[in-house]
Image (tube, rainbow, N blue to C red; front, side, top):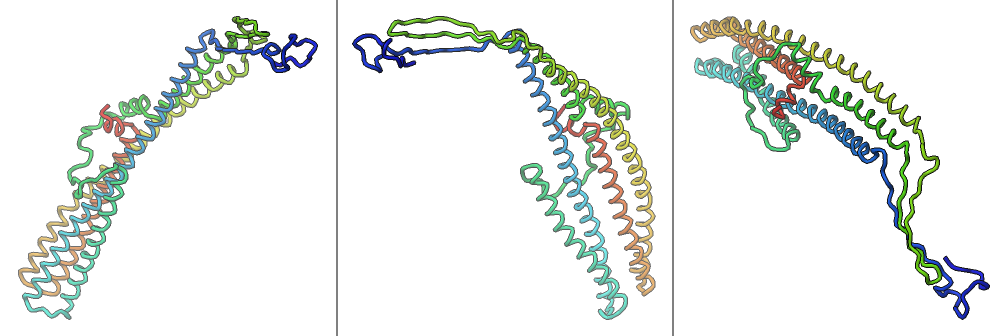
Length: 350
């Protein structure tokens, strides 16, 4: 602070002499009262738990996407197995016909060649598709995966599913969206406690060094905001409204989670029944193929060849229908595991 009126300057001093100046040094610290620090930390911790719940939801969705992509690769691998079997079977027919001296222009040879070409084209396409699915799976898991997905029963490590009511209770208790809704309520309550402690404001404590005309002065001070009590009524009312809203949302999400698990369970049970129905048709179709195949190789005629090719195509279609049924069953099982949060729990070893 510079004294600007020369009438008050110290005699025999220059205008900018320190004898005509004051220096003010001030060091301050806000005081957190009425549990403000504790409530601030509590609010931060509740917000951290909310972020963790949101993160768990993202992780659960990533587990679902990865499992579904693995299932896509598994389905293509199964389809390749069927196509290889059918292609080899038709190849044997072509070899048999050539050994019998059947002309390449004959009806039998043309029909068998067309069917063999169809299977081989589908096989080549499926092999390319498998590599594509594996590359996509690599992106999801962040590393290389086996070139040959395991063809054993998927999800066998999950064991027998618990009853529906247990799945629903587990989902409501552990699913990330339900946990996040409950945690949102805790955040609102923590914010209300924090705003209550803020009613008292924050007094400021400080130290002053104030040399005046070369004479040192020091002192302590405390500043109390005015008015002393700020009710923070609006902030506290907003926090209470958020808590009530979060409570209602948590109840709605709990009901929604239960509905999702119940619907997923219903779809899975239906898919299992459909798969069993299709599995019962494979045996007769395979036996019919063996009969027509034996008749054809035993005494080759155009009629026996046509019967064999028709039985071959029937078995081919039945195998693919069974594969589609199994794929649907496993997809619905995955959806059930995801909806009940057992997929994420299993992935994280909970």
